[in-house]
Image (cartoon, rainbow, N blue to C red; front, top):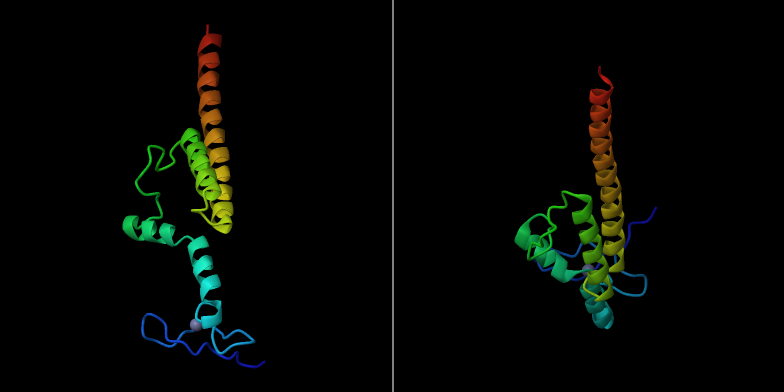
Length: 134
Ligand SMILES: [Zn+2]
């Protein structure tokens, strides 16, 4: 196995870039001067704004915090799904991130609905139990 050629650029930290160089270049995709426009577009699509929001909140919560955060009910999780759709269609959320968020939110909606149904069924069973006693 051969060691990959490494990018010749210096990262913002001042350390050498740790990414492998592209086959046709001495640089990685992010540092290749001939790919600067594409790299800029990729960074924007990758959610630089979202990263800043995560820095501000420290938890990945949307900023400013919406009424539906922190997703404690199925209705809140549905509102979160709506937010993901709006952010994706407006171009502020990358499709890859939207896919991950939508998958997690869909699972959460299902779990919260199942939990809600369990509680309602339990309450009905108690009511019926109470009624059937002489
Ligand atoms: Zn690099």
